[in-house]
Length: 443
Ligand code: ATP
Ligand code: MG
Image (cartoon, rainbow, N blue to C red):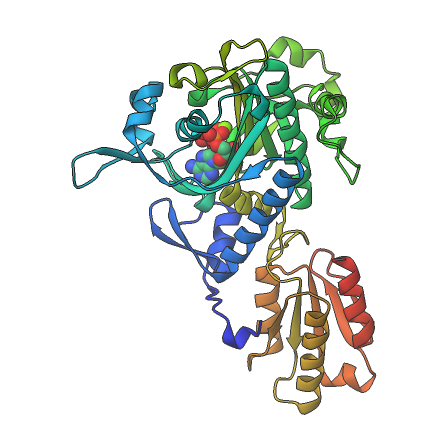
Protein backbone atom coordinates (compact mmCIF):
# COMPACT_ATOMS: atom_id res chain seq x y z
CA UNK A 1 0.00 0.00 0.00
CA UNK A 2 1.18 3.49 -0.84
CA UNK A 3 0.35 5.92 1.91
CA UNK A 4 -0.57 8.64 -0.59
CA UNK A 5 -3.41 6.42 -1.78
CA UNK A 6 -4.47 5.02 1.58
CA UNK A 7 -6.97 6.33 4.10
CA UNK A 8 -5.06 6.86 7.34
CA UNK A 9 -6.56 9.82 9.19
CA UNK A 10 -3.96 10.20 11.96
CA UNK A 11 -4.65 12.82 14.61
CA UNK A 12 -2.01 15.26 15.81
CA UNK A 13 -3.79 16.12 19.01
CA UNK A 14 -4.37 13.65 21.80
CA UNK A 15 -8.12 13.11 22.03
CA UNK A 16 -9.28 14.25 25.45
CA UNK A 17 -12.05 11.68 25.85
CA UNK A 18 -9.61 8.76 25.87
CA UNK A 19 -8.41 7.73 29.32
CA UNK A 20 -6.12 4.85 28.50
CA UNK A 21 -3.22 4.40 26.09
CA UNK A 22 -4.84 1.89 23.76
CA UNK A 23 -7.92 4.04 23.25
CA UNK A 24 -5.82 7.16 22.68
CA UNK A 25 -3.51 5.39 20.25
CA UNK A 26 -6.30 3.74 18.29
CA UNK A 27 -7.92 7.14 17.77
CA UNK A 28 -4.66 8.90 16.98
CA UNK A 29 -3.52 6.20 14.56
CA UNK A 30 -6.78 6.49 12.63
CA UNK A 31 -7.91 2.94 13.45
CA UNK A 32 -11.40 3.60 14.80
CA UNK A 33 -13.98 6.32 15.02
CA UNK A 34 -16.77 6.43 17.54
CA UNK A 35 -20.21 6.25 15.93
CA UNK A 36 -22.10 6.48 19.22
CA UNK A 37 -21.32 5.50 22.81
CA UNK A 38 -19.53 2.13 22.76
CA UNK A 39 -20.08 1.69 19.02
CA UNK A 40 -17.23 2.18 16.57
CA UNK A 41 -16.50 2.32 12.89
CA UNK A 42 -13.40 0.36 12.02
CA UNK A 43 -11.28 2.54 9.76
CA UNK A 44 -8.98 0.74 7.28
CA UNK A 45 -5.96 0.33 9.60
CA UNK A 46 -8.05 -0.88 12.55
CA UNK A 47 -10.06 -3.17 10.30
CA UNK A 48 -6.87 -4.76 9.00
CA UNK A 49 -5.69 -5.69 12.50
CA UNK A 50 -9.18 -6.90 13.42
CA UNK A 51 -9.09 -9.24 10.41
CA UNK A 52 -5.63 -10.54 11.36
CA UNK A 53 -6.80 -11.40 14.85
CA UNK A 54 -9.89 -13.06 13.46
CA UNK A 55 -7.73 -15.08 11.07
CA UNK A 56 -5.54 -16.39 13.89
CA UNK A 57 -8.62 -17.36 15.87
CA UNK A 58 -10.07 -19.21 12.86
CA UNK A 59 -6.84 -21.05 12.13
CA UNK A 60 -6.41 -22.23 15.71
CA UNK A 61 -10.06 -23.27 16.10
CA UNK A 62 -10.00 -25.24 12.88
CA UNK A 63 -6.73 -26.85 13.95
CA UNK A 64 -8.48 -27.98 17.15
CA UNK A 65 -11.21 -29.66 15.08
CA UNK A 66 -13.88 -27.01 15.68
CA UNK A 67 -16.22 -26.09 12.84
CA UNK A 68 -16.85 -22.49 11.68
CA UNK A 69 -20.33 -21.24 10.81
CA UNK A 70 -22.28 -17.99 11.14
CA UNK A 71 -25.41 -17.17 13.10
CA UNK A 72 -27.34 -13.89 12.82
CA UNK A 73 -26.99 -10.89 15.11
CA UNK A 74 -30.74 -10.35 15.48
CA UNK A 75 -32.56 -13.15 17.28
CA UNK A 76 -36.13 -13.92 18.21
CA UNK A 77 -37.07 -13.57 21.88
CA UNK A 78 -38.94 -16.88 21.74
CA UNK A 79 -35.91 -19.09 22.22
CA UNK A 80 -34.74 -16.95 25.12
CA UNK A 81 -38.11 -17.39 26.79
CA UNK A 82 -37.68 -21.14 26.41
CA UNK A 83 -34.34 -21.07 28.24
CA UNK A 84 -35.66 -18.63 30.81
CA UNK A 85 -32.96 -16.06 30.06
CA UNK A 86 -35.17 -13.47 28.33
CA UNK A 87 -36.03 -12.01 31.72
CA UNK A 88 -32.82 -13.00 33.50
CA UNK A 89 -30.49 -11.18 31.14
CA UNK A 90 -31.68 -7.77 32.28
CA UNK A 91 -30.89 -4.37 30.84
CA UNK A 92 -27.74 -5.42 29.04
CA UNK A 93 -29.92 -7.01 26.38
CA UNK A 94 -30.95 -4.70 23.55
CA UNK A 95 -34.59 -5.49 22.92
CA UNK A 96 -36.25 -4.54 19.66
CA UNK A 97 -39.62 -5.22 18.10
CA UNK A 98 -40.23 -5.78 14.42
CA UNK A 99 -43.08 -4.31 12.31
CA UNK A 100 -45.41 -7.10 13.43
CA UNK A 101 -44.76 -6.31 17.07
CA UNK A 102 -42.71 -9.47 17.59
CA UNK A 103 -40.06 -9.31 20.29
CA UNK A 104 -36.56 -9.53 18.89
CA UNK A 105 -33.16 -8.85 20.37
CA UNK A 106 -29.61 -8.13 19.27
CA UNK A 107 -27.75 -11.22 20.47
CA UNK A 108 -25.46 -10.73 23.48
CA UNK A 109 -24.40 -14.39 23.07
CA UNK A 110 -25.71 -17.47 21.25
CA UNK A 111 -26.33 -20.48 23.51
CA UNK A 112 -30.05 -20.60 22.71
CA UNK A 113 -29.68 -20.27 18.94
CA UNK A 114 -26.96 -22.89 18.63
CA UNK A 115 -28.87 -25.30 20.87
CA UNK A 116 -31.90 -24.86 18.62
CA UNK A 117 -29.81 -25.66 15.54
CA UNK A 118 -28.40 -28.69 17.28
CA UNK A 119 -31.77 -30.08 18.39
CA UNK A 120 -33.20 -29.65 14.88
CA UNK A 121 -30.62 -31.91 13.31
CA UNK A 122 -28.75 -34.15 15.68
CA UNK A 123 -30.41 -37.30 16.97
CA UNK A 124 -27.72 -39.83 17.77
CA UNK A 125 -24.62 -40.02 19.92
CA UNK A 126 -22.85 -41.16 16.75
CA UNK A 127 -22.88 -37.55 15.55
CA UNK A 128 -20.90 -36.47 18.62
CA UNK A 129 -18.53 -34.98 19.60
CA UNK A 130 -19.42 -31.74 17.83
CA UNK A 131 -18.05 -28.23 18.35
CA UNK A 132 -19.44 -25.36 16.29
CA UNK A 133 -18.30 -21.76 16.48
CA UNK A 134 -18.69 -18.40 14.84
CA UNK A 135 -17.15 -14.95 14.94
CA UNK A 136 -19.98 -12.46 15.03
CA UNK A 137 -20.89 -9.03 16.41
CA UNK A 138 -22.57 -8.98 19.78
CA UNK A 139 -24.45 -6.23 21.51
CA UNK A 140 -24.53 -5.70 25.26
CA UNK A 141 -26.00 -2.47 26.51
CA UNK A 142 -23.17 -1.95 28.98
CA UNK A 143 -23.98 0.58 31.66
CA UNK A 144 -20.57 2.21 31.29
CA UNK A 145 -19.06 1.68 27.85
CA UNK A 146 -15.49 2.96 28.05
CA UNK A 147 -11.86 2.54 27.07
CA UNK A 148 -12.72 2.41 23.37
CA UNK A 149 -13.06 -1.11 22.01
CA UNK A 150 -12.19 -2.63 25.38
CA UNK A 151 -15.67 -2.20 26.75
CA UNK A 152 -17.87 -1.47 23.82
CA UNK A 153 -21.57 -2.02 23.46
CA UNK A 154 -21.18 -3.56 20.01
CA UNK A 155 -18.17 -5.87 19.91
CA UNK A 156 -16.82 -8.78 17.91
CA UNK A 157 -16.63 -12.11 19.67
CA UNK A 158 -15.70 -15.62 18.77
CA UNK A 159 -18.09 -17.94 20.51
CA UNK A 160 -17.93 -21.70 20.28
CA UNK A 161 -20.20 -24.39 21.63
CA UNK A 162 -19.41 -28.04 22.26
CA UNK A 163 -21.95 -30.87 22.33
CA UNK A 164 -20.89 -34.13 23.92
CA UNK A 165 -22.47 -37.33 25.16
CA UNK A 166 -20.77 -37.39 28.54
CA UNK A 167 -19.27 -35.02 31.04
CA UNK A 168 -15.90 -36.61 30.39
CA UNK A 169 -16.09 -35.86 26.66
CA UNK A 170 -17.26 -32.32 27.37
CA UNK A 171 -14.29 -31.75 29.66
CA UNK A 172 -11.98 -32.87 26.85
CA UNK A 173 -13.68 -30.21 24.68
CA UNK A 174 -13.02 -27.73 27.49
CA UNK A 175 -9.35 -28.69 27.49
CA UNK A 176 -9.12 -28.40 23.68
CA UNK A 177 -10.44 -24.86 24.01
CA UNK A 178 -7.94 -24.01 26.72
CA UNK A 179 -5.05 -25.25 24.57
CA UNK A 180 -6.25 -23.60 21.37
CA UNK A 181 -6.75 -20.31 23.23
CA UNK A 182 -3.24 -20.42 24.68
CA UNK A 183 -1.89 -20.94 21.17
CA UNK A 184 -4.01 -18.14 19.71
CA UNK A 185 -2.96 -15.54 22.26
CA UNK A 186 0.70 -16.45 21.91
CA UNK A 187 0.49 -16.03 18.14
CA UNK A 188 -0.80 -12.52 18.82
CA UNK A 189 2.24 -11.79 20.95
CA UNK A 190 0.26 -11.87 24.19
CA UNK A 191 0.57 -13.71 27.44
CA UNK A 192 -2.98 -14.48 28.61
CA UNK A 193 -3.12 -16.38 31.88
CA UNK A 194 -5.99 -18.80 32.54
CA UNK A 195 -7.54 -17.98 35.91
CA UNK A 196 -10.31 -19.61 37.92
CA UNK A 197 -13.38 -17.45 37.47
CA UNK A 198 -17.08 -17.13 38.12
CA UNK A 199 -19.86 -18.28 35.77
CA UNK A 200 -21.94 -15.08 35.65
CA UNK A 201 -25.13 -15.13 33.53
CA UNK A 202 -23.79 -17.89 31.26
CA UNK A 203 -23.80 -20.21 34.27
CA UNK A 204 -21.72 -23.19 35.28
CA UNK A 205 -18.99 -23.39 37.86
CA UNK A 206 -16.30 -24.97 35.71
CA UNK A 207 -14.79 -21.95 34.06
CA UNK A 208 -11.55 -20.12 33.39
CA UNK A 209 -10.99 -16.60 32.21
CA UNK A 210 -7.89 -15.63 30.23
CA UNK A 211 -6.28 -12.45 31.50
CA UNK A 212 -3.63 -10.18 30.08
CA UNK A 213 -1.85 -8.39 32.91
CA UNK A 214 -2.09 -4.60 32.50
CA UNK A 215 -2.44 -1.72 34.94
CA UNK A 216 -5.47 -0.45 33.06
CA UNK A 217 -7.30 -3.81 33.24
CA UNK A 218 -10.77 -3.81 34.76
CA UNK A 219 -10.37 -7.09 36.65
CA UNK A 220 -8.55 -7.57 39.90
CA UNK A 221 -6.46 -10.73 39.89
CA UNK A 222 -4.36 -12.72 42.33
CA UNK A 223 -1.70 -15.19 41.25
CA UNK A 224 1.48 -17.07 41.91
CA UNK A 225 4.17 -15.32 39.84
CA UNK A 226 5.32 -18.75 38.63
CA UNK A 227 2.37 -18.73 36.18
CA UNK A 228 4.04 -15.94 34.24
CA UNK A 229 6.97 -18.23 33.41
CA UNK A 230 4.76 -20.62 31.45
CA UNK A 231 4.58 -20.48 27.69
CA UNK A 232 3.06 -22.81 25.14
CA UNK A 233 5.82 -22.32 22.58
CA UNK A 234 5.86 -24.35 19.39
CA UNK A 235 5.25 -27.78 20.92
CA UNK A 236 3.28 -30.24 18.80
CA UNK A 237 -0.25 -30.93 19.92
CA UNK A 238 -2.66 -33.71 19.02
CA UNK A 239 -6.13 -32.43 19.85
CA UNK A 240 -7.53 -35.98 19.91
CA UNK A 241 -5.07 -36.94 22.62
CA UNK A 242 -7.15 -36.67 25.80
CA UNK A 243 -4.19 -37.11 28.14
CA UNK A 244 -2.01 -34.57 26.38
CA UNK A 245 -4.74 -31.91 26.49
CA UNK A 246 -5.46 -32.70 30.15
CA UNK A 247 -1.72 -32.46 30.89
CA UNK A 248 -1.55 -28.98 29.38
CA UNK A 249 -4.60 -27.86 31.36
CA UNK A 250 -2.90 -29.07 34.54
CA UNK A 251 0.39 -27.42 33.65
CA UNK A 252 -1.30 -24.05 33.07
CA UNK A 253 -3.91 -24.11 35.84
CA UNK A 254 -2.39 -25.93 38.81
CA UNK A 255 -0.71 -22.83 40.24
CA UNK A 256 -2.84 -20.28 42.03
CA UNK A 257 -4.35 -17.74 39.61
CA UNK A 258 -7.81 -16.35 40.26
CA UNK A 259 -9.99 -13.34 39.62
CA UNK A 260 -11.40 -11.47 42.62
CA UNK A 261 -14.73 -13.31 42.27
CA UNK A 262 -13.14 -16.63 43.24
CA UNK A 263 -10.14 -15.35 45.20
CA UNK A 264 -9.43 -17.30 48.40
CA UNK A 265 -7.18 -15.61 50.97
CA UNK A 266 -6.30 -18.87 52.72
CA UNK A 267 -5.07 -20.58 49.57
CA UNK A 268 -3.32 -17.41 48.47
CA UNK A 269 -1.41 -17.30 51.76
CA UNK A 270 0.06 -20.75 50.97
CA UNK A 271 2.07 -19.30 48.07
CA UNK A 272 5.63 -18.36 49.11
CA UNK A 273 5.49 -14.67 49.91
CA UNK A 274 7.94 -13.53 47.22
CA UNK A 275 5.72 -15.11 44.53
CA UNK A 276 2.37 -13.69 45.72
CA UNK A 277 1.01 -11.10 43.31
CA UNK A 278 -2.10 -9.01 43.05
CA UNK A 279 -2.56 -6.98 39.91
CA UNK A 280 -4.98 -5.78 37.26
CA UNK A 281 -5.89 -7.75 34.15
CA UNK A 282 -7.85 -7.51 30.91
CA UNK A 283 -10.21 -10.42 30.27
CA UNK A 284 -9.66 -11.55 26.67
CA UNK A 285 -11.56 -14.83 26.80
CA UNK A 286 -13.49 -17.27 28.89
CA UNK A 287 -14.32 -20.97 28.67
CA UNK A 288 -17.20 -22.77 30.37
CA UNK A 289 -18.46 -26.25 30.94
CA UNK A 290 -22.10 -26.05 32.04
CA UNK A 291 -23.38 -29.60 31.56
CA UNK A 292 -27.06 -29.78 30.65
CA UNK A 293 -28.09 -26.26 31.69
CA UNK A 294 -29.35 -25.39 28.19
CA UNK A 295 -29.82 -28.83 26.66
CA UNK A 296 -32.40 -29.85 29.28
CA UNK A 297 -34.81 -26.90 29.04
CA UNK A 298 -34.39 -26.72 25.26
CA UNK A 299 -34.65 -30.47 24.75
CA UNK A 300 -31.28 -30.98 23.05
CA UNK A 301 -31.03 -34.72 23.47
CA UNK A 302 -29.45 -37.59 21.61
CA UNK A 303 -30.07 -41.27 21.63
CA UNK A 304 -27.22 -42.86 23.56
CA UNK A 305 -25.61 -46.25 22.83
CA UNK A 306 -28.15 -47.85 25.19
CA UNK A 307 -31.05 -46.47 23.13
CA UNK A 308 -32.02 -44.03 25.90
CA UNK A 309 -32.54 -40.37 25.10
CA UNK A 310 -30.18 -38.15 27.11
CA UNK A 311 -29.51 -34.39 27.19
CA UNK A 312 -26.11 -33.48 25.78
CA UNK A 313 -23.29 -32.00 27.83
CA UNK A 314 -22.34 -28.57 26.63
CA UNK A 315 -19.87 -25.78 27.12
CA UNK A 316 -19.36 -22.37 25.58
CA UNK A 317 -16.11 -20.62 24.87
CA UNK A 318 -15.55 -16.99 23.96
CA UNK A 319 -12.71 -14.81 22.75
CA UNK A 320 -13.08 -11.03 22.75
CA UNK A 321 -11.78 -10.41 19.21
CA UNK A 322 -12.30 -6.63 19.13
CA UNK A 323 -11.22 -6.19 22.77
CA UNK A 324 -7.96 -7.93 21.87
CA UNK A 325 -6.83 -4.92 19.83
CA UNK A 326 -6.99 -2.82 22.97
CA UNK A 327 -5.30 -5.49 25.07
CA UNK A 328 -2.47 -5.96 22.56
CA UNK A 329 -1.83 -2.21 22.46
CA UNK A 330 -1.95 -1.89 26.26
CA UNK A 331 0.77 -4.52 26.41
CA UNK A 332 2.79 -3.17 23.45
CA UNK A 333 3.30 0.57 23.20
CA UNK A 334 5.64 3.40 24.22
CA UNK A 335 5.44 7.24 24.26
CA UNK A 336 5.71 7.36 20.49
CA UNK A 337 2.91 4.96 19.70
CA UNK A 338 1.93 1.36 19.09
CA UNK A 339 4.44 -1.49 18.72
CA UNK A 340 2.63 -4.30 16.87
CA UNK A 341 3.71 -7.86 17.51
CA UNK A 342 4.63 -9.42 14.15
CA UNK A 343 1.69 -11.86 14.33
CA UNK A 344 -0.99 -9.15 14.07
CA UNK A 345 0.69 -6.15 12.44
CA UNK A 346 -1.43 -4.45 9.77
CA UNK A 347 1.57 -4.15 7.42
CA UNK A 348 4.73 -6.14 7.95
CA UNK A 349 7.17 -3.40 7.03
CA UNK A 350 7.16 0.34 6.44
CA UNK A 351 9.23 2.03 3.75
CA UNK A 352 10.22 5.63 4.38
CA UNK A 353 11.53 7.68 1.50
CA UNK A 354 13.61 10.54 2.96
CA UNK A 355 13.64 12.49 -0.28
CA UNK A 356 10.47 12.04 -2.25
CA UNK A 357 10.99 13.20 -5.81
CA UNK A 358 14.68 12.29 -5.89
CA UNK A 359 14.89 9.94 -8.87
CA UNK A 360 17.30 7.52 -7.25
CA UNK A 361 15.49 7.38 -3.89
CA UNK A 362 12.09 6.96 -5.57
CA UNK A 363 13.40 4.12 -7.73
CA UNK A 364 15.03 2.36 -4.79
CA UNK A 365 11.76 2.56 -2.82
CA UNK A 366 9.80 1.17 -5.76
CA UNK A 367 12.28 -1.71 -6.01
CA UNK A 368 11.98 -2.46 -2.29
CA UNK A 369 8.21 -2.32 -2.53
CA UNK A 370 8.20 -4.79 -5.40
CA UNK A 371 10.72 -7.09 -3.73
CA UNK A 372 8.80 -7.22 -0.42
CA UNK A 373 5.51 -7.76 -2.23
CA UNK A 374 7.17 -10.50 -4.26
CA UNK A 375 8.01 -12.26 -1.00
CA UNK A 376 4.32 -12.32 -0.09
CA UNK A 377 4.59 -9.39 2.34
CA UNK A 378 2.48 -6.26 2.49
CA UNK A 379 4.64 -3.15 2.92
CA UNK A 380 3.34 0.33 3.66
CA UNK A 381 5.31 2.85 1.60
CA UNK A 382 5.27 6.42 2.88
CA UNK A 383 5.53 8.16 -0.50
CA UNK A 384 4.05 11.45 0.71
CA UNK A 385 5.89 14.68 0.07
CA UNK A 386 6.54 15.25 3.78
CA UNK A 387 9.49 16.01 6.02
CA UNK A 388 11.44 13.01 7.27
CA UNK A 389 10.47 13.86 10.86
CA UNK A 390 6.76 13.74 10.08
CA UNK A 391 7.17 10.42 8.27
CA UNK A 392 9.04 8.88 11.19
CA UNK A 393 6.43 10.14 13.65
CA UNK A 394 3.58 8.55 11.66
CA UNK A 395 5.45 5.25 11.32
CA UNK A 396 6.21 5.20 15.05
CA UNK A 397 2.60 6.00 15.87
CA UNK A 398 1.07 3.25 13.75
CA UNK A 399 3.68 0.86 15.07
CA UNK A 400 4.83 -1.35 12.20
CA UNK A 401 7.50 -3.65 13.68
CA UNK A 402 10.05 -2.97 10.90
CA UNK A 403 10.94 0.09 8.88
CA UNK A 404 13.26 0.46 5.93
CA UNK A 405 14.54 4.00 5.47
CA UNK A 406 15.84 5.08 2.08
CA UNK A 407 17.80 8.27 1.43
CA UNK A 408 20.16 9.62 -1.23
CA UNK A 409 23.16 9.55 1.10
CA UNK A 410 22.78 5.87 2.02
CA UNK A 411 22.10 4.91 -1.57
CA UNK A 412 25.46 6.39 -2.61
CA UNK A 413 27.05 3.87 -0.27
CA UNK A 414 24.67 1.15 -1.51
CA UNK A 415 22.76 0.85 1.75
CA UNK A 416 19.34 1.41 3.32
CA UNK A 417 18.52 1.34 7.02
CA UNK A 418 16.49 -1.41 8.66
CA UNK A 419 15.03 -0.37 12.03
CA UNK A 420 13.20 -2.34 14.68
CA UNK A 421 10.27 -0.42 16.16
CA UNK A 422 10.58 -2.32 19.43
CA UNK A 423 14.29 -1.83 20.13
CA UNK A 424 14.93 1.23 17.99
CA UNK A 425 18.10 -0.46 16.75
CA UNK A 426 19.04 0.29 13.12
CA UNK A 427 21.32 -1.56 10.75
CA UNK A 428 22.73 -0.43 7.43
CA UNK A 429 22.24 -3.13 4.85
CA UNK A 430 22.08 -3.48 1.11
CA UNK A 431 18.45 -3.34 -0.10
CA UNK A 432 18.59 -7.04 -1.05
CA UNK A 433 19.77 -8.10 2.40
CA UNK A 434 17.20 -5.86 4.11
CA UNK A 435 14.40 -7.51 2.12
CA UNK A 436 15.75 -10.99 2.88
CA UNK A 437 15.99 -10.14 6.57
CA UNK A 438 12.38 -8.95 6.75
CA UNK A 439 11.15 -11.95 4.77
CA UNK A 440 12.97 -14.26 7.14
CA UNK A 441 11.35 -12.66 10.21
CA UNK A 442 7.91 -13.43 8.83
CA UNK A 443 8.73 -16.83 7.32
P1 ATP B 1 -16.80 -8.74 31.20
O1 ATP B 1 -16.68 -9.43 32.54
O2 ATP B 1 -15.55 -8.04 30.76
O3 ATP B 1 -18.04 -7.89 31.09
P2 ATP B 1 -17.97 -11.15 30.25
O4 ATP B 1 -17.38 -12.11 31.21
O5 ATP B 1 -19.36 -10.70 30.46
O6 ATP B 1 -17.00 -9.88 30.12
P3 ATP B 1 -18.08 -13.20 28.21
O7 ATP B 1 -19.52 -13.47 28.13
O8 ATP B 1 -17.19 -14.13 28.93
O9 ATP B 1 -17.85 -11.71 28.78
O10 ATP B 1 -17.58 -12.90 26.71
C1 ATP B 1 -16.41 -13.44 26.13
C2 ATP B 1 -15.38 -12.38 25.85
O11 ATP B 1 -15.93 -11.28 25.12
C3 ATP B 1 -14.83 -11.74 27.11
O12 ATP B 1 -13.81 -12.54 27.65
C4 ATP B 1 -14.32 -10.42 26.60
O13 ATP B 1 -13.01 -10.58 26.08
C5 ATP B 1 -15.25 -10.09 25.47
N1 ATP B 1 -16.21 -9.04 25.89
C6 ATP B 1 -17.22 -9.17 26.78
N2 ATP B 1 -17.87 -8.01 26.94
C7 ATP B 1 -17.27 -7.12 26.11
C8 ATP B 1 -17.50 -5.73 25.80
N3 ATP B 1 -18.49 -5.06 26.37
N4 ATP B 1 -16.67 -5.14 24.90
C9 ATP B 1 -15.67 -5.83 24.31
N5 ATP B 1 -15.43 -7.13 24.55
C10 ATP B 1 -16.20 -7.77 25.45
MG1 MG C 1 -16.32 -13.54 30.88
